[in-house]
Every structure is written in C-alpha cells, then in structure tokens.
Amino acid sequence: QVQLVESGGGLVQPGGSLRLSCAASGSIFSINFMGWYRQAPGKERELVARILGGNTNYADSVKGRFTISRDNAKKVYLQMNNLKPEDTAVYYCNARIRTISERWLEVWGQGTRVTVSS
Image (cartoon, rainbow, N blue to C red; front, side):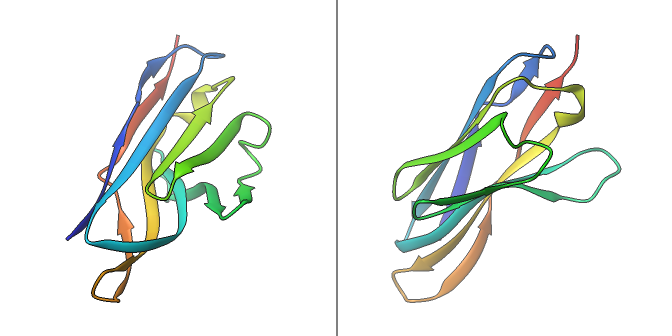
C-alpha cells in the first residue's frame, strides 16, 4: 500500500505565508513526479505546481509567489507567499509512484484546507 499524507494547511490573512508538506510512504520503489493540485468550492481541481528532477512548472496564477521543492525522494513541499483570497482551496498532493512490485500508480493525498481571509 502506498499513501501520501499532507500537512500545513490552515487560516491565514491576505499577504501571509504557509508551507505545505507531503510525505509518501509504503511499498515504494521510486517516485517519478510529485506535485500539488487545488480545488476551490464550485471549481474543478487544477494543477498548482509540479516537480520532476530539477524541473518545476507552475500555474500562471501562482508564479512568483509559490515555490515547490523536494528534500529527498519521498517528501515534497509547497511554500506559499503573498497569499490571496483566491488561493483558498483544498490542496492535494499528487505523485506518480513505482511500487516494489513494479506497478505504476498515480496517488493522491487526502487534502489539506487553506483559507485566506481577513
């Protein structure tokens, strides 16, 4: 079994910062990409940022404010600065994982809520 567990969400005022963390665990052989998606009320889930090796890509709406990083093979972070009310959403960690039984899985975390409000 493979799982992703997020942490770090919460309530923050506009202009503030939060750091989301995601840790992968289970029968993992390797991880391809890791990324963050978000889903705001009444909207579809959208890609926020993704990292593969040394390459990153971001949604236009977060460029210059959010930074995705990995400190080892199984953890990914999202540093969010200058948060805006429109960043309010549930944030999901996502990864493409190869298990020790050589299956490729796309795995989602349970989500962590971020609310930006004064």
